[in-house]
Amino acid sequence: MSVRRVVPDVASERFAESRDFYGLLGLVEVMNHGWVMTLASPENPTAQVTFASHDATAAVRADMSIEVDDVDAVYAAVVASGAEIVHPLRDEEWGVRRFFAVDPNGRVVNVVSHRRG
Image (cartoon, rainbow, N blue to C red; front, side):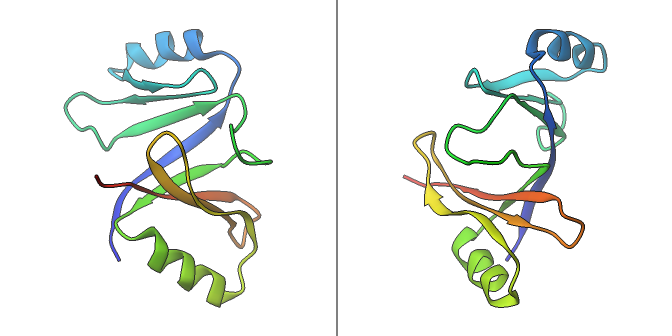
């Protein structure tokens, strides 16, 4: 299993203001679904921050997202560990497969892979 990126997820209703502020630091908008927006560095596209007003399919908002190369293998390992799953493994309409688990600090982690094909 390999980690592709780790992204902080910030609870926010202020997308325009956040885009303007973080734009001063060199980040640009790379994704916006209305309820979730991601800003990234043009020079280092894995340097990202995500802002979300809510989650379109989960009852909770994630505190961070970790993109992995094999979300199914990670899901099996996390379930076997006994960690709490708060959003089951599923394919989302925007092209990702993901689940949410609670870490030992009570933080919700969105574990995600982009679907191929």
